[in-house]
Length: 272
Image 1 (cartoon, rainbow, N blue to C red):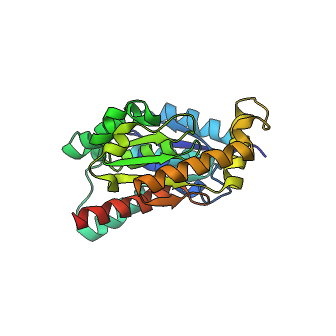
Image 2: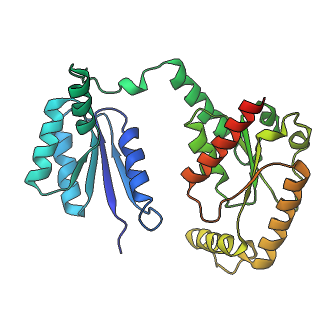
Image 3: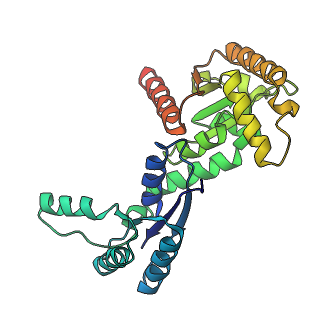
């Protein structure tokens, strides 16, 4: 079966529509879809090209267009070519207009105004990139959350997801051949460390798939049960030594694990 295609169309950045599309796709067999973002749409010609491409590929259009003329034009063209189109913003704005009793401003990108909250999110994303995969242990002391676990336990996706929630996240891979950085054990507040655990059979499947995408044989030692058992045993020992909370990510989506992590951080803050 071909990978389903979703066109993300917006007269701003398109993050809102993409987030909704990903959330919906996650409900269908792992959420494997191809997203194609068409941002900052201000011309009908761009809409024409996008709708025609979606028609050819039997794709769906998901859009956040707040300018009335462009929104109506996109809906018209989608109906004309019989392309499914989902309006993310329109119904919500209409409901709020009825509730508030005043029309919306209809200005693209207002949600991304350069306020303090926006800058905190950008800073958190840059932090997650800089301190990903244990690159620089000096960042551990400055992190709000530190994720530890073996390879393929979603440390990086979780770091980026939490960064969008304005959390500064560093992550450290646990490998038997490399001792964790001393900075990890020297932290005064070890409650911000979260361990990620995974069942061996689940990790085996994930690593086999990873090897296939790299064009390597699934029988490589990276995915062998012997190697996986050694790594998981080492990781469990490190987590016991740190006495940190541990989450089993075997059957959890990134969003679900992130929610648990945020609850842990929230409890830590209330206890402080």
